[in-house]
Image (cartoon, rainbow, N blue to C red; front, side):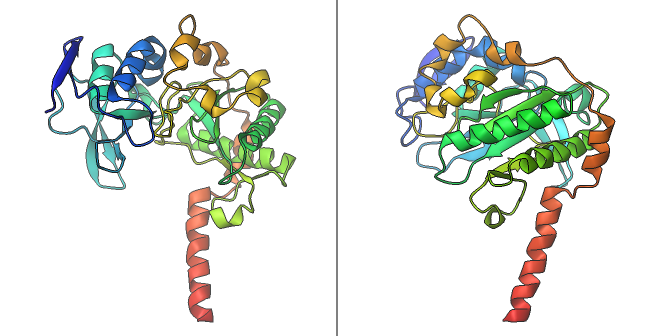
Length: 319
């Protein structure tokens, strides 16, 4: 337990003057103050969603925390979710109030990654997500150009989405979907939309999951489905200057850069409104033809795993 420097909403805040992480240009107090300032904006997008957080401790590498530690106060809301991969139950935080948000901030939780589904219906994600990941060293403009391809593909399917910077080097496109869509239908539609977008400009974008197959193109990631998490709107990122994942109107996307939005600049930008909620279309039904098309497209992770094994066999045979 560090030195208590302040108490807010019953939460003892410690070591606030310490640097947040190397290159942050910010202290732990800056993180706490930021999350407290934007709590009315970020909490609605975390509430009732199992939450993973990226934490950073002094002198240690950052780590993703899913399971709440044993020392978590009893008053922190949580939900138990069975993890098939690790064959165990994981106790996820449910961050829907200021006190929990402040406690997580005091734990040096910098990034907030909620699930795409709520605890009320974990098998039915509320949003379809396409993650635009530009190649290393590429300018942000190429991610924007790929996002505009996704927008065209969505329009062609009669759908509309909202867009935000990832806070790192990419862009996230979110499409709210009607409650009756299952995780399998949503995953199929995501694959179809990703492929349709990449086909609009195959020199710019690709759906190739294996990095070495992307040939310097923007990766349109269709794997943010099912139980996946995506960094929340208004979440800080573990990057120099502590940028924030921030919603941008489509027409302004070409004129921004990710570093425009940081824990220093964002509170003033959201003081009067929630641009993520305001820019989000109403929930939409997924077109049946999109789902049918998506079911013919291999799941990227599975395909990549099979291809990796095939290449390994080929290398062994050649050697």
